[in-house]
Length: 328
Image (cartoon, rainbow, N blue to C red; front, side, top):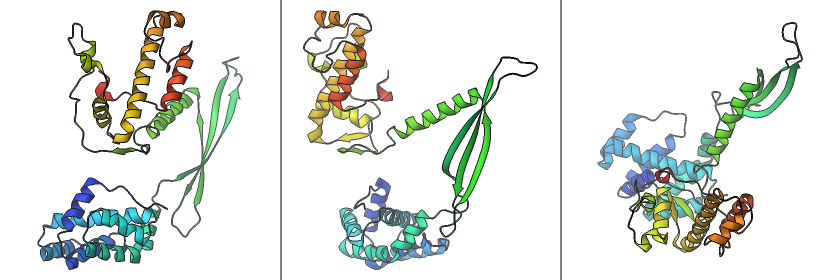
């Protein structure tokens, strides 16, 4: 059971504005938010009436209603208790009486809200259940002898939940796919798996997503590769400040206590990259270590590319993707 949830900046901004409302007006806005989870459609007249009473514009009231509804929905989805929900509201700097009003409404309607947000209607997309396949191989025909043409027959089983009180409806679809079609399906599924493993996934411990970052860094890696570039020694050294800026360009915020360790790991990756680049020009890895400054390198020690990569991954514990802003 979760004890917290991440709130959007727009939600926090709307909640901060709602803090200025009186307890009575804030309660009216909260009740409008609870109505969104019922079967009754939201009335524009109610929004206008609440706006006139509170002295707000109708759009402001609507934003506050949606923000409070989002907080109620997230709390219900996380199965938070009334006490845990209060702690979250206090973290949003809401006045004590506003916290009491919203927490009481949450406790009274949490079951209905949770049922509403988890309900599946008849128009929901069918859920995957099972996939079976069979190869049908035609060895030859009157016109094409000794030319096997394998065809794969797929059977896809799905289930559709029309309502929470009924048994899911099962449905099976059979289709025939040739080799080219299978390869196309493979590429599409591999692309989907890469998206799942991308930055859309949950962030590791110690990192949190930020929404406002500079478009370009204040320093450029491209300058290090320009012919005749005159740079100070400090400009060619990766520092914690530069690493923090790079992390923000990747929409990540690194905690201060984790910066030194992350910097060391990034330096290990850079050193590993230098070794791999040198190996592409030298067949003998021993020559690389004998003629360059890699002999004291403890991260990339090894005698083949596979071992070098394995050492770097094992010692750093990170898998890095080059941000698009740095690909130039």
